[in-house]
Length: 256
Image 1: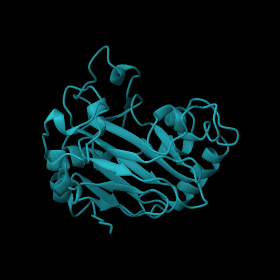
Image 2 (image 1 turned 60 degrees about the horizontal axis):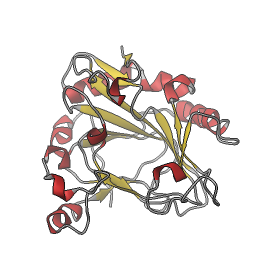
Image 3 (image 1 turned 30 degrees about the vertical axis):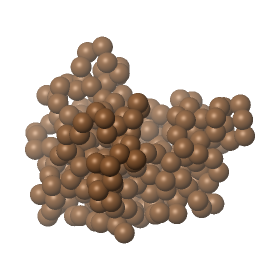
Image 4 (image 1 turned 90 degrees about the horizontal axis):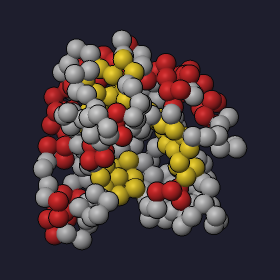
């Protein structure tokens, strides 16, 4: 099951659901060129990169030294290495969408969070458990929006995202999370919530906008093709990263 919401006419849905899909927002000329740039840095994998073995998620190799241990998970620092993706992620059109969703006059792209190309390989790809991105970020306010740019088809077979609509509005007790701040599926209070999850299916060029507090997860890639997605995070200019935290490690990029 998938759900698609139109951003221009359904902004209220973002406030209620915590996500919205804009079909074809990224033009074919852009995502095709971006794919060429990304693939040129995948074989061999060029730094900076994160590997499946680094995260230790279910299904990931135990270390970089074992079979599949050097399977890439993310190509990092995307705005400084992929010109086409940078141009799109910092474009006036994307900026206007983020401003409308946050209800603010000016926004910035964080270089400290996401700012990457997510790679999900057919072999040795892991599952991502239920989590909220903002739990790992440190800003004055938890009001951030990320975009997920589909560079190819995304569906249940290749590990597309699942989300829990409206979960960005919840405040859950710490006991409902494990030590790594993932939702605990065995906890009775979490089971009704997890049953409301839906699958987000995307075509190349579709862009998912989602709130930093939205619970989301993803499965492994069970196809024979690598799945590639670009992910960027934005915040209002007056919503500052807290000094001394990872969120303040790099200066944000002001958008038009």
